[in-house]
Image (cartoon, rainbow, N blue to C red; front, top):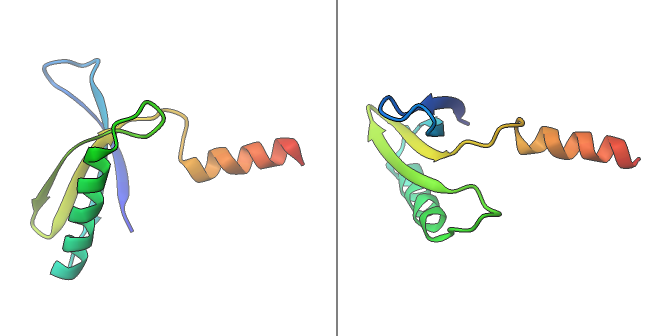
Length: 85
């Protein structure tokens, strides 16, 4: 559904973001993603990945969120489940 890249701020290299790039062929899907971004922007908590901003360009949505080192959540959960079983 999307591809995630790591991006750095040119002016401040210590500032790092994860960029979710999603192709959005239909306006209906774009509307749902805008709602997701609005909810994410309201949920500021140290236990939740923080939303920064998003941009729409040439049928692609670029969503900038807090970069979390350590891989995708699915892989972390899988590794944890292997340890306890």
